[in-house]
Length: 235
Ligand code: GLP
Image (cartoon, rainbow, N blue to C red):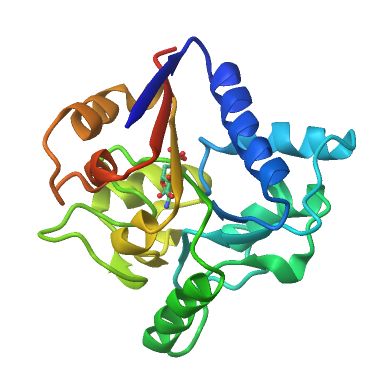
């Protein structure tokens, strides 16, 4: 795995956008695996600017997002679908029909998990998967566990994740306690993986990428991915 340290969040965002833009340039109909959270905001900003200036073309790109909260509809401003529409899809020339997220409001979540795994497979798995990392090492919403989950599944969020994500909700009680996420197996099928981590993730970057590979630190599995890049900053 390649670990790149940069001096600022701006540099991190620029470098991540460069990698995604070159993927799109190299394969205009590529499948991008995308992530939500604060970490990719600068990357999405960069991609939107490049697209606005006519330097990048998303017209044939397909996207699959990692995860979604259970119980929130696409119209809910806290949903990851809403986040993606606001921060990327609505700002680039992508065909909305080519953007995919799990449906957290599906009435049969088991069927939804199977549908989403098949969908990602039918697209041929991501050419490039963008990831952030939680303070407890989660990727997507794969929380520390006894095993690495293989496929798309629902998950009970860890207390620490609910607390960390409550900054984006009015009250901690409003944070959904369940989510649907690509499994570790799903994520590992991406041809390339790019994880970005800001200064607040120093400790977990050390544990995940310089420590043992263990499902207690789900992101540590990326040490075994044949083409994984981590870009992080300490400041
Ligand atoms: C969330 C998301 C993850 C994200 C992580 C880190 O819970 N499910 O996909 O990578 O937390 O988020 P942030 O970048 O806001 O720290």
